[in-house]
Length: 635
Ligand code: ZN
Image 1 (cartoon, rainbow, N blue to C red):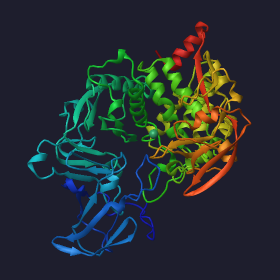
Image 2 (cartoon, rainbow, N blue to C red; image 1 turned 90 degrees about the horizontal axis):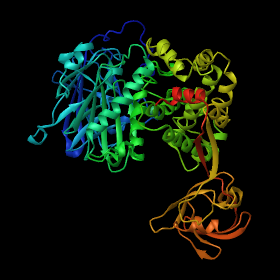
Image 3 (tube, rainbow, N blue to C red; image 1 turned 90 degrees about the vertical axis):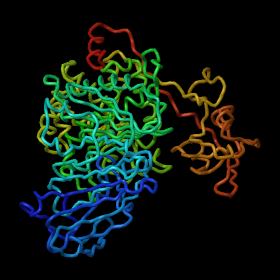
C-alpha cells in the first residue's frame, strides 16, 4: 500500500524495511469486548512516525472505516510519553522521538461477521485489518505477533486456531509440516510482512477441532458456537471438495499452494457469510446447515448442508482465484481507499460458478441437484430488471458503492457480479467446450491464469482474461465478452445447454401463499403485484421492493408503502397475493395504502405475473453427449 498522502512515495530500500514490527494482542476485557493491542518499532521515522489502519478488508469491497473501533490510543518511547495525534480518519502522527516507539490502544470488537473482530467471554476472533496499525513505510518489514491468553482461570482452556506461523516453527515446510501439533497455543507468531499478517484471521476459545489431509496438506476444521455437527462427515466431504480443487489447478503434481489450511467456522442460529484468505477462510453459518451426528440423510446432502458445502467450496476456490491469481488493481492492495477493477465478475463470478460445479465433480451432489441450483440462479437473475441496466464489468467497478450498499431499488438498478458472473462463467465454459469439440474448457483458462499469474505473482491486467479465453477456445471471443461482460445481454444458455442434452424451460412461479390452482391458467393470464411483500409486526403487507414496470409501480406505489385494502376489503401479508390473483389480468381494482402515516387511494391495473421458474431437465442422449456431460459435471 502506498504511503498516506502528502509524502512522496519512498523510492528504493526503505530504512525500516527489514526491521521487525512487534505486535501484541491481549483480550483484555472480554466482557467489554476490548482487545488491548500494541505495536512497537525500534527506529521510528526521525521526522515523526505515522501509523495507519486499513479502511477495508481484501475480499469485501466496501470502505468500512475500521479505525472507528479504536477507543483509546497512547504512544511511548521507553517510559516517556510521546505526543500522537490523528491527521485523518485512519492515520496517526507521532511527534519525533529516538525510539523504540510503542503505541498502545484498545479496539472494540463486537462485530459478529467474518470481516472484523468479535470478543466476549466465550471466544475471540479478529482480522488483522481491524487490529494492526501499520507503521508507514514498513509494509515489507517482517512482523511478530505476541498473542496473549486472557487473564483468569476461566480462560485456561482457550486455544488458538490460525494459519499464521508460530515463531518457533518458522521455516518448517514441506513434508515436515504434518508433524506440527494440530492446534496452536498462545505465544509468538510471525509473518513475512504486513500483507501476510493481516491475511491470517485468528480464532481463540474452546472450539471443536478436527483435521484431515487433502493431497498431503493438513486441513483443519474449527467450529465455534453451540452445535452438534458430525465432524467425521464434515471432514470427509470437505476433503473431497479440496482434493478436487487442488487437482483442477495442478492435475499432474496435485500440489496445493499452501502448507496448511484452516476452515474457521462460527455457527449461529441464523447467519451466512464467508471471507477468503491465503491459507484459511472465516465462515459464518447457521448451525442447522451443518450435518447432524447420527443423521446420515440417506447419504445425500440436505438443502442447508448443500448451502454450507457450496460456501466452503467457494471460499476454498479463492485460494487460487483472487488470493493468488489477482486483478492487477490488487497488486499490491491499497488499503487506504477503494481499489477499482472491472474484473470482479471473474474473481467472484467464476468462483461462484465453480463452487457448486466442484460439489458435483466431487460427487457430493448429483447432476440433477447441480442443475436445480443453476436453474434457481437463472430464474432469480432473469427476474431482475437491474440486469438490463448495468453490465457485470460496471457492477465490478461500482461494487464499493452499489453491490455492497444495496437499497430497495437495487433490484431495478444493478446486477450481481456473483450471480450473472457465475452464469457468464457457465456460458463461457460451454462456449469453449463447443468451440473445441469438448477438448478444452474453462478449466484450461483457469490453469493458464494460474501458471502465468498465480505462480508468478503478477496481477491480471484488464482485458487479459478475454485473450486467454479466446486462445484456449481457438476462436475470437471478443463478441462474447462485449455482449455478456461489458454489455447487458443475457447469455443464451438454452442454446448452449442443448449441447449437453439439457433442456431449459420456464413455468410461472407459484407464490406459496395458497393462491389456489393456477396450473391451468396460462402464464399471461395470472396477474401479479410486481413487488416484494413483507409482513409488518402487525401482519400488514408492506412493499419491500417495487419492480420496474409492474402493477404496483404503475399505480404509483413505492417501497415502504403498506397496502391495507383491495377492492374495499382488508388485506394482510398472508392473503394479499391470493387476492390479487383472484382477478383477471387487465382488471382495475381500487387499493388503499399508507405511505408513512398518510392515506393513499389508487387504482391498480393488474399486469401479468412476470415471476417465472426456470427448469433444467436432462434428456436421454447419445453416448458421446453423455460422455461430454460427464467430463463437465464429473461423476
Ligand atoms: Zn467470493
